[in-house]
Image (tube, rainbow, N blue to C red):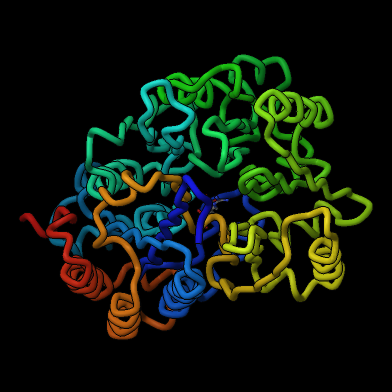
Length: 450
Ligand code: SUG
């Protein structure tokens, strides 16, 4: 169900057994507002799995990315916490329950933040490039990159096709949040695409503007474009609108989404928005690429509605009939104005989207993670696709096994104080060990090699 030359595969992060609400991301309204509420890890994992199954059933290629070991007991030992696991959990909690939470977060589920990926068409060496995101804005997320790098190398192992770059320097100057701040405009019949890196600010500029409230730096984005050997003629750097960041747009994928030649975005997405869109238009013109822009004006959809519905955190996918489907969170259905707007889009023949589908991701949404946050989009040609490790790809049997596995191991409620319970860690060990057997991917967790 893909274009002529490219295959789109979306890898979704399987929600881990310790999914909980801790308000760890203060710039993220949902995370902050749901701090310490009761979560349902089983429901969260099943909702995520149902999204994968829905897309798989519709003929899209769907991958599964395993969760990380949490509580991150190995990292806690490195910080000087010692003794039995029970003693460690207790002494971390005695220091601060928020500290324990940061080492127990299931945040690796939001796989859009795992890496920035450039398809081989755009790179000088004609390889698919991956740069794992350092995610160094928050303690809970900064622990994700090593595992992400290891799994990406396992899936995309053929060095002839794939080039892997480790996370950028772990310092605010190079803060990187992966593909959540990266878009691409392309057209199947044309090899070259236009890559757009969206950053919050430049570290050298924020001293002047005193605007520290951002996650992605320009310096990180330019470093990635160099590592990926992108053609500067077709690479753009857009600055997020600081007003939007201030009101809770912590990633670009909360306010803009691209698929092929379409860019769907809010009026407050970028600074100098008109000039920036003109840049895409002129580059598209040079490539003979039929660029389509759907700009949603504030008068039609308020920024606050866009954030609460996660309208732009949708997945837009290309169908066999040449049209596109938009997969939006349920929340879009319940906000009348958003739902009406979406219906106007599909009724407009000038736009390629002709179908809306809603999906219930409520558990993830309560932490600020919609459909697009959960997936990492990879564009491959046929040869590259054939070379990937197929054990990570969803099929009917794997879906059934994962569903059973979730129902067997995941709790149906978790509150912040449950994180101290050493029995939760035991359940996690058992669950993750069985997961590697289900996926047939060998030992990937440290505890399996001890
Ligand atoms: O980094 N939430 C994530 C949500 C990530 C969404 N990703 C994209 N937009 N691509 C974040 O803010 C909340 C965790 C907590 O509070 O328990 C959290 O980390």
